Image 1: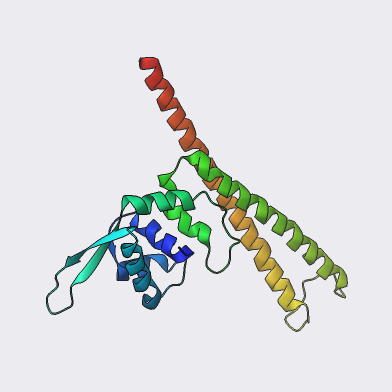
Image 2 (image 1 turned 90 degrees about the vertical axis):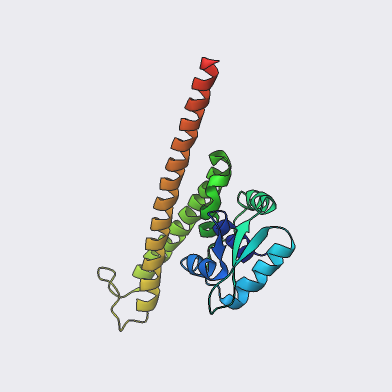
Length: 196
């Protein structure tokens, strides 16, 4: 199964949707077209990961409303804690966050810790490259101007640093949320055990 298939399952884990609704929901994190989504939904249905019901419409073809099956949920549970690919325009981690509630927080914490470490290394690399760029520039006291040959590299490095910082802040926040959830769950279990 490809990553988009898992993404569709992740969306359906939130509740039943039509193919069109899935396309709209997935757009903020993954660019996908009708021509990709509908064949994947058919394949997921054939393999027992989703099912659909047809809803009659007046003056329009009947629409299919898809829902995830238990087999689809199990596939998501296997996919979610697996190693996540490096983020690109299509970021698998963002798709996984749709179904993060399906597994124990301790299993998902590792994903965010790895992402945090990865962006920490990138941040160091970008800052080193920016320092080198300033050393090479005639006047290290000021920023390269728009007419400077290093301006494009400077603004891309600045963007990369800002993006890495934002990603690291987000990962820390998610890890804090997962930790609090795990602590609440442990306290509830301890209280239940004490009551017995």
